[in-house]
Length: 114
Length: 113
Image 1 (cartoon, rainbow over the protein chains, first blue to last red):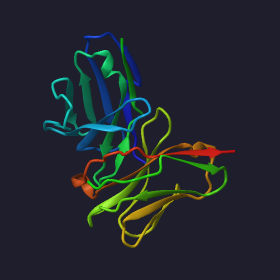
Image 2: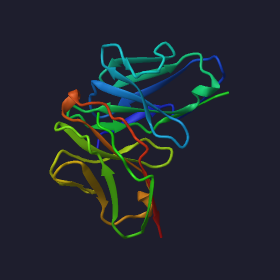
Image 3: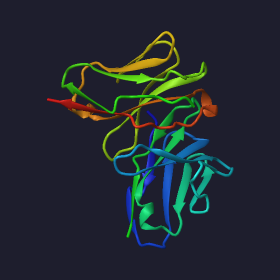
Image 4: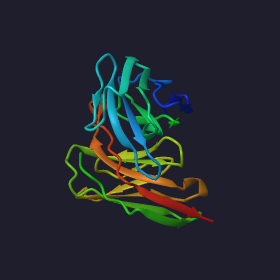
């Protein structure tokens, strides 16, 4: 199947700083990418849909000014958590959609805010 | 997107078939049934999807009832590595016009020796 990577796989940052997470589709072009967040013992929660060259669409309750999404190319989308706080500590997962509509997920990024 | 209902947990003996049920009684005619699984602390892995016909691939089989209100994912010979949370999701399929995936709580499958 198609491969999606994320970088970094884990990151620890101090409260008030910003963190950028990258999501790349390695062997296919993805005009649409998605960002999810997952807290311990919970299911994945969709945060936003990212379309190449246009503004992301955020799900209800997700602060667009806090979670900045950029999808500058067909193989790269980035999520920046701005002014991170401990409650933003979570497992962040991206997925990329092929032309056939199948979504492949990255391995996730574990963010810990101290 | 229609919602799905799955049992929260199931056990299966290693080497036996694992049958994971899913109810999606409000599914629309253009919505597909997708199955993903998530092994602890990893990203979800695509398993299989279907519209109305039964489907089979190297990982699993998907049986969809004739009225499409429910489906069953079958892992024919479960191994310990199949221990994971299995998610049944319905969404509009087809190209990049496909709808977003909304995850429910899934079924936590434990394969035991």
